Length: 215
Image (cartoon, rainbow, N blue to C red; front, side, top):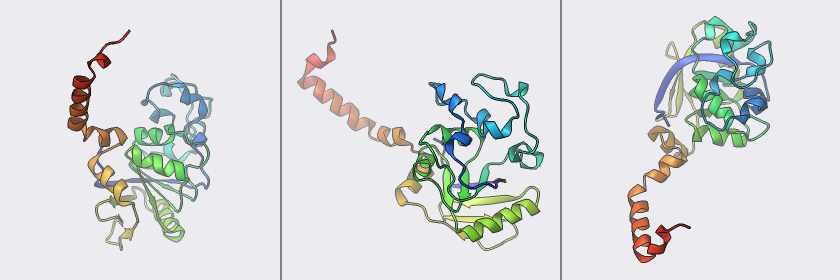
């Protein structure tokens, strides 16, 4: 998992409340047994005018010109601005996979669904909760200024706007912050103990050598 310390990026506004995980990554794309390739189908039913299925070439699809991520001014956005209750619905971990693989590193909203919120941290995406009034102001600024960027400083726990405006502080649980700043997902955390794991396995095998044999 990539480390997250400071990230500066273009902002895209997702101006809808209660965006659920089926909208983030529709159910037909959950058939894959791999953890990769979901970014091209992020918000698939909103991004395209035709119905999408796994394995389709995006170049052959009909994009929806009215959808925010298809607008040239938001091309390459890596910070998503959202409304309340983002990520509600089913608990599919594919939703943060799709967001991360599309290129988003942070999501700013007044509130998130709990399971989606937790899954983001495990997949290198930083969900930031800010007061609704602050989020509304960010939406206004994003619409008003093409090329609108924000800087997210996880170490200082602030979101900074261009032009020297006052930083916006946010809260993050200490252990989650530690994992993101060091690039540790659940597997990475376990592998920190690889020497102890190997020592335990060697000791166990020495005491119970029959465990090495299989039928």
